[in-house]
Amino acid sequence: ASAFESISMAPTDPLFGLMAAFRADPSDKKVDLGIGAYRDDNAKPWILPVVKKAEEIIRSDPSNNHEYLPIAGLASLTSAAAKLVFGGDSPAIQEKRVASFQTISGTGALHLGALFLAKFYPRGSNPPVYLSNPTWANHHQIFQNVGLPIAQYPYFAKETCGLDWNGLTSTLQSAEPGSIILLHACAHNPTGVDPTQAQWKEIAEIMKARKLFPFFDTAYQGFASGDLAKDAWAIQYFVEQGFELCVAESFAKNFGIYGQRAGCFHYVAAPGAGAEELTKRVGSQLAILNRSEISNPPIYGAKIASTVLNDPQLFKEWEQDLRTMSGRIIAMRKALYEKLVELKTPGTWDHITSQIGMFSFTGLSEPQVLKIREEFHIYMTKNGRISMAGLNSKNVDYVASAIDKVVR
Ligand code: PLP
Image: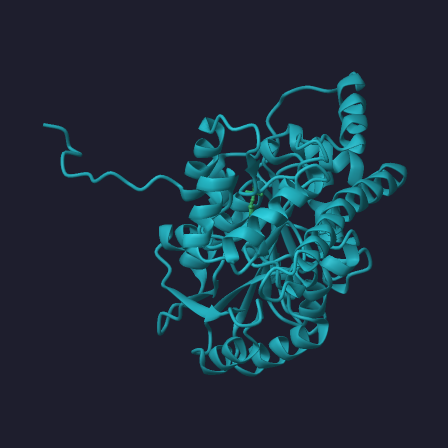
């Protein structure tokens, strides 16, 4: 008999199941609003023009090869990545209290951080990792896999399709000191709802008072608003406030290099005597973890991102590409909103334009989601989340009128 005789069938990943159902649907009207990747106005993947340029530069470099990277990854990438998240003149970088490691995209950065916390974070009273409710589903698995206890903080208010501010703050206020709080830096997935800067300040204040540990997940910098600094504001504010913290950074969305798996994990020590030396010790342990998990990170996506981040002219072109992507998404939000208003669709739809980033929580119920899939071949996750990237000038009216029909 197999050693695994008693193993049970795991459920299929809901998102990948949704993609398979979409592919199998023969209808020519079908619309994929499940995807977590940018699409152009023809519903096609988009290679950023600046990425094409970077690839040409890499390929024509006579010293280009496919050797192993160091354990910490491509140094020119990790240093530029730190500047991107923390700001070019960040005192944390100047004071050498940032340890940066290249990882397998954002997922790998979260995993490396989770593993590091599971191994080294003081577990005295076993404080949990708080995830937003809801959150990107993989967060649960990533932290559970390393044995950390999970708790949730309320995030989304169904009535307003906005932030559950009271739920969020009261939970943080009663969280056990030492709890780890996972925060989406911008473009919260799946809701599209972000705190305002004033609200971030209050969150920081509560977390400082309650001695809570911030772990930022930043998967959409520049992709959300089109402005890199604006999308990193919350992280930079927390660093400025003197927190010790972790950041998981992904280049999947903002460079459109999803499958290249380029990302970084950053540890930041609080300012003060001994911070640089502490950062070195933390870095030495992170190196052992990265070595045992992946040995060394993938090279190609790292070279692409590094080439762009380290060349002022390419960097400018990248910012333009980011504005192209975020601009199209913001335009689709507006178009969907205006069509729903024009159709006098029951309910309020302001949240479609006030939410930000790739995703929007529409407020559609599960039966409505199933109905829109069956009758209109429009695919979205059961929680009513739609990917704005799946909308384009050709299908937005069709989607709006289908939403109109299922909510009546
Ligand atoms: N974090 C969030 C909130 C995400 O939405 C994603 C991707 O969808 C990731 C992290 C990680 O993505 P990747 O591993 O492709 O960088």
